[in-house]
Image: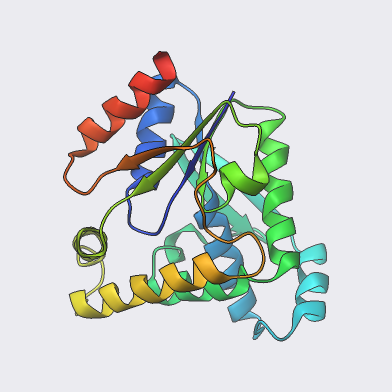
Length: 217
């Protein structure tokens, strides 16, 4: 079984994906985490989006492994655990840039489809229901207004990063929304058969209950 969850950054899709997986006793696969891990790795190697051929060579020769440890997804690249870096705003911005490259998207797609052959999954991202798993058993498109998403991201980041600025987060989300929905390759968009879940005014439990109701029905 594949449950596809798409939506913009900060909409709550990652949290919902984990809770759905917990309730249904299946794995939650965080696609954005893979993109951010690769972006961190490529930036560390001095790559930019203009180095596509070099990036292709790097990705062909690096070892990317995804594990589930105590229910948490971990990403290792060349044996380095890069999971702790993926929530940084700077890495999120890099991921939005590098994800424009087909070679990067193909790498992530291969990882996703490999897991789908072995496990029942809740997979979240931006093109899961449209490009990666167009035949998913269930498709949801999770949204929330910009102010709500910015505040959620702010509350999360301020726990680990000092000097986080709410307005900067809001502008960053606005920029990412535009870039993700206007890129040429696999843009963020709602699948025709996806169910919209607006989390703006709902608690996490209310949003979760709505999704589980559709699945169980």
